[in-house]
Image 1: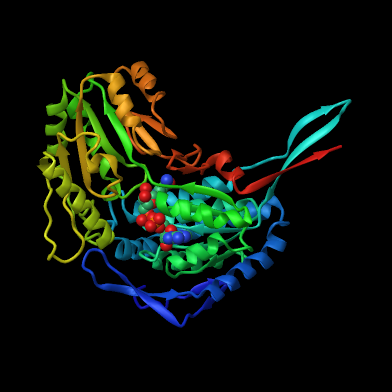
Image 2: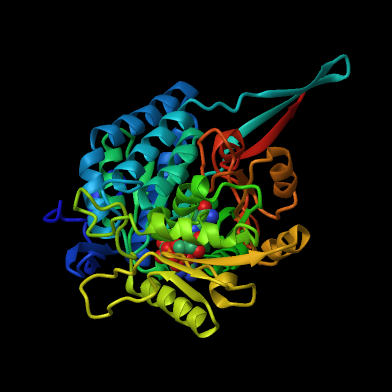
Length: 471
Ligand code: NAD
């Protein structure tokens, strides 16, 4: 697909733009393709097309909408390899491991599961006083703004529930990974009525224009907390509905009864899935002093076995950092940690002159809250490890963060682990694993990690408004 002409998708048509921008391969810095740079006038066209399509789509019967979502899942299945190759080229993640093929598999599974969800009319009262029914209605045009870490799966998380419930969509992917989204939207347009799903790509100004656009009724956004705040401010004047999935700085707490060898692999992938560029990855690891050195040793030996390389190589299981800004951020945080007495167990140095944005898998022990690598979301392949002795104190430290997306507790005594879990201030807590998400379970953050949830009936309901009918 490198020779493909990437264009906007508006009203089922491929639309050229005057300007384009280059998209780079994070493994070698080479240009993967040119993405169209939409103007705000082209965004307006996309919103108008979505508004026109909404008139019919919002009235389509439930079976039609359900079938369309199944067709989306089938299309993803039929084009999975093509999309995975393109995703690896622009995102950097490997084809294998929990990389591009895994992401496409997830996108299909989410689409298929969501297609089968229902929000039936709820009878709230039916007696001699009268009958009251609660109906769910679509909101209108949904604006979807997506990040660069899991671009296709997150796009599907936004698009499918919106379409399933009778809305139409304008999606704007990250300028760092727009090509795979454009291609996916082109393919999905072959199974959807014109105007139901539109795609505009451009720079951040397009996202800002979407937030304040009077023709968009809801924004679903996945990205950083700072951008989420700007979107919320931009959306205020038009009172948009919002679902905001924002940053995370998930803590994991390892209790003293753990077997260090047994948990090492789960801890590693909880933190390093997608090279740590995952919202609900384990980003701070607190380990009880009794097993602290054991856990450090086991994690280091597991980390040493992991093959990092160009994503297109079939034996890589981790790729480069997606972009130079993020690479520099991870590097700065690790350097800061070193300066504050952090002990590098593995990794910790990179070659700025080597091709691509490769940063090694890095474990830094002996840090604490107050160190930047602990307090800030690193969003890359570097994990701080913190020693603790008192359980109440470690729960306080885990909660001492503006984010509240996920968390995990590791221990053999499950009742005790669950008691600790219930005290963590976050939307999801896992016991003896980290970051597992499923389409039948709502997912969302508390505190600075966002507003609302995605997935399952609760997530679907966010694409609707309530109307009650009294009779
Ligand atoms: P980002 O906030 O920089 O960008 C996300 C999207 O917002 C991009 O499409 C970008 O072009 C757009 N954007 C930028 N400025 C905008 C503005 N002023 N108005 C509207 N849109 C604007 O985030 P990112 O760096 O692409 O993604 C990484 C972040 O996303 C991390 O913080 C991560 O934790 C978070 N994330 C959260 C979840 C979740 O489910 N909670 C999932 C994945 C990623």
